Image 1 (cartoon, helix red, strand yellow):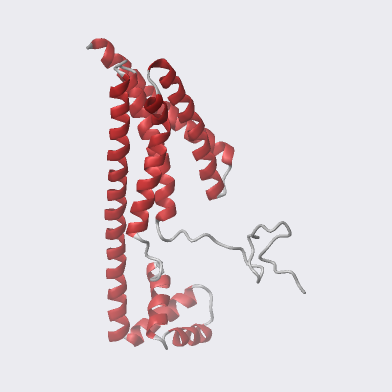
Image 2 (cartoon, one colour):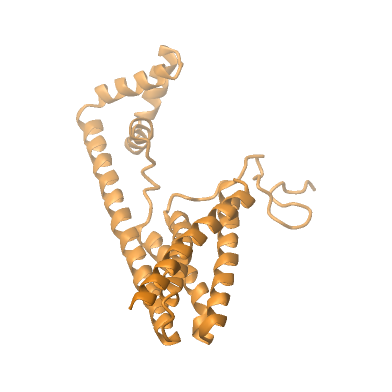
Length: 248
C-alpha cells in the first residue's frame, strides 16, 4: 500500500498534500494578524509603562497597579480597534460586492466584455478569453466571485472575521502585557525591576523569532529587531520616569 504523502515517516504532517501541493495557512480571518500585533504591542506597551513608572521609584503597589491598568486598558482598546476596523472593512467590501452583483444582473453583456478584456490583457487569445468569460458567467455566484477577484482583488468567501480578530487581539495583548508584570505581582524593588527587564528582553526575542518563523523571514533578524524596539521604548520611558520622579 502506498504511503500517504501528507504524513512524514516521523508522523509529523508534511507541508505538502496528497497531490504534491504545498499546504497554506488560513490567514484571511484576521485572527493571525491581530494575534501577532497583539502580543507584540502588549509586550512593548507594558514593559515601557512598567519601567517608566518604576523609574520614578514609587511604592511597588503603584507599579503593580499601573501595569494592571495598562494590561486591561490596552487589551480592551486593541480589541475594540480591531472589531471596529475589521467590521468597517468588511462592510465596505460587502458594499462593493453588492454593486458588482447589481451590475451583473443589469448589464451581463457589458460585464462579460470586461472579463474578456481582463483575460486578453493577461495574454490569453481573444477566442479563448471569450470562451472562459462565457463559462464563468453561466452561474451567478461563480460570475460574482470571478469579477470580485479579477476587478476588486477580493475573495467574497474570505472577508475576515471582526470577532475573531478582536478576541485574538485581546488575548494576545493581555499575554504580552502580563509577562513583564509578573515580577511585580510577586515582589517589588530593584529585584522586580531587574526581573521585569530580563523577562521583557527574553519575551521580545521570542516574539521576534516567532514572527520571523511565521513570515518565513530570518528568525534571528526578527528577534533582534523586536528586542531593539522594546529596549528603545523601555529606555525612553524609564528615563522620563527617572527625570520626572527626581524633579517632584
